Picture (spheres, helix red, strand yellow):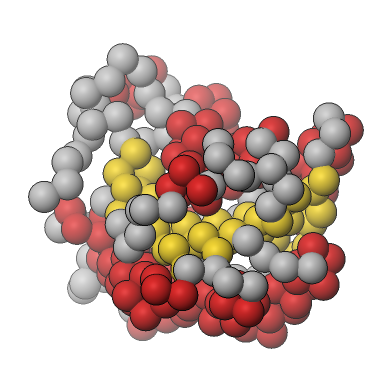
Length: 254
């Protein structure tokens, strides 16, 4: 990727899955990588592995639902790197998704938790990061969204609303600060067959998920990582305020 070498990029939610694959891809591209996660053991294990391969990777514990830890995370990253060139905000409350039924079954606590983590937490990450990027002439932001934001599903209304909120945050950032060198885009992953899913999902379910694609295989975390790396690199300089669907052709943009 163009001009990723030497950049300082923070991956939030980088201990496992898509976040971990992105941290690995960025490290391979010569990026100085920070990993923020509540799963600090997983983050530290990944950092140790990548540093042994010649990377420059550091980790911090933080809680996406706690603004004070978000502010401490960004402050720590800026102090360590001297600047932040990019941020990948890849955090959602996946436990809440498991009980996200419909508008009648969801209580206010589920709504509050989902929006607190997925939307407000993301907004606070952006709020803490932007001043540092603006001070240094710009930077690239990538937020993880979902096709649930526009699909109109019969379930998961809280999750869908939160991801629609993430898309709105993206467009706001691009509109407000694009002329000052800030790029902000969202990535909407399709069904990604992570190692955990591969080990725990039966063949029938995997085959059912595959039927919806226009591709030769299931998606992998590395597919999303490659797209994120592009958007964070100077190759993606003219992409701003967009929602990218990286899903093997399961759905198309309007």
